[in-house]
Image (cartoon, rainbow, N blue to C red; front, top):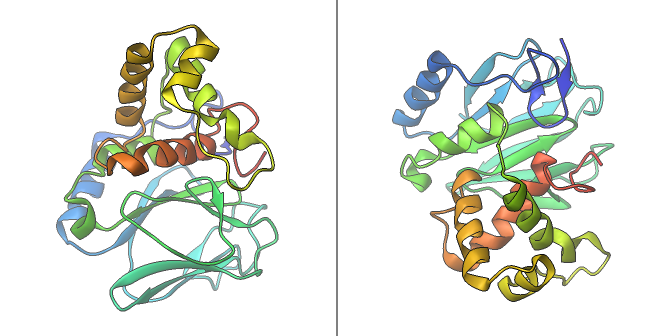
Length: 235
């Protein structure tokens, strides 16, 4: 059995294991409880859902509530998930050796989590589900995050790469490329760029976010997925 850096243990020829009907049904069943939960693949590649009933430690140690013992990039005590005043947060204040990531961005200290966020510890991706926040919209996100790989056309991949390009440097204030800049780089019309971006928003499960958040969320999920060359927490 191989190991996919984004999806967890894989099943066939190094490809992420597609989500099965039974696994999808388990996610839907967990959503109906209207309690926050996590979705991830275990050491054998099976899809697991874990209800969050309090604070949860994350690490490679067997004593961790979420024990990712199979991933040698995860520290013994790596991070902690806390529930405070109805909010869910991820805390990594230096415990981990390789860092914790939310949608491709490294966490320094505490980070508030939202429905559909992708956490990455070492090579392992864990999906956050808060059904009361997401109005059951994240079943598709679950498929993308821990199931089959996202398939992109050649042009969609080019648009995605151009969108992310300004964030490859060291400028902390950089923003994703504008539609016009993408159009100029790829010799496309602006309406064509918008059309491709709408398809990407849908494929990465960010289409229902507010308009001013979609582009950054798309960049974060693209970087976490490893679909953009030179990006990703494990790069």
